[in-house]
Length: 411
Image (cartoon, rainbow, N blue to C red; front, side):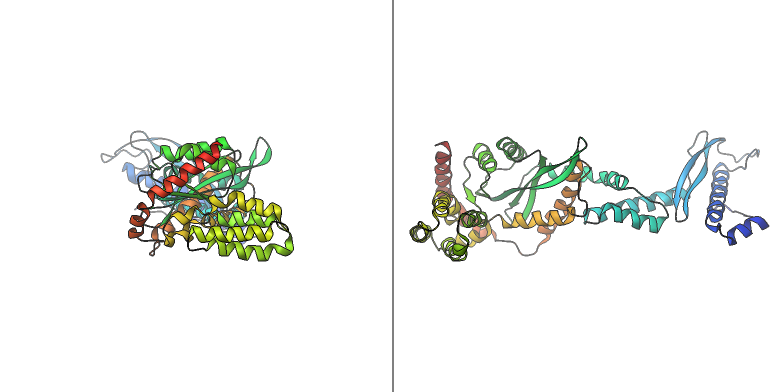
């Protein structure tokens, strides 16, 4: 260990006690650390400057300057160079560890919904140096490798059930603020647990972009899906019908109910909502059809647009009647994905406008990784494996529904 002797004269002591003590302490720390660097150099070389010694291991080769952020500000250090072997200092080794921990903490703060401005203030308080919003965002780029590995991983498991949806985030592009769509695919795997299996950003929701997203899932290995649940966006329907034509589609009953009620006079909405809920809770398709017909008869005169919507979308909204009853509540709506989107919004609200499209993938991708890991660690699954054997017995019925849906789309 290098030994140091530091001497202060009267003026230096008075500066430390005076009004400019912070600057004086910076100067003292800078000189002290530079003395440490010189002593470490001599210790590694086994010789002081200009000393002739048989134990000498290398020779000096000038120096370089390097800044170091400290609690009392940024100081400039003179780092020795060695001719053959690189000079090593415990100062920078310790600093690197602290810096890595700081960056990791800053990144985690942003991912967990702390604004970059607040992160900067916390760091300035703790470390005596400030980081701009852009610097904090730049530091978060360390997430890129893990996020991209997660979202591009091969899909080797069995995923009998799939939900898809999109949500929007504001970002800057070409000096203006625009909205970008983040497409998300959530699946339930063979263990009965939810899993985020895909996400990506696109300019907007369209037939082309949903086709690309569905195809990317298929290219990564997604297959043997038994049922897909989503809202009735035409892009989703187009993508599913062209990439997974053999898979039946369940129209989200929550969104479908909302579509119907939006076309209903306000004074009849609560009554119709109750009747639609009873229809969807029917024990079998035959009973559901009877309740639908009764609703059509009762409301046709007072809410014709609503009954037309119900009649047109009914078949797609009761696809779940073809799967085991214990699985219907799980798959009849895309509410799990809606709740996920709300969590993403909560985390992103403190960011406001993302600096670029890559930052959406980076930060929201990190949140999706975190949530997917929580799903995986849940003790109680949504269903147990024996139910899947019962589902297999419904294969022909589900295939027939998918075929009928394809015929309707083709017409």
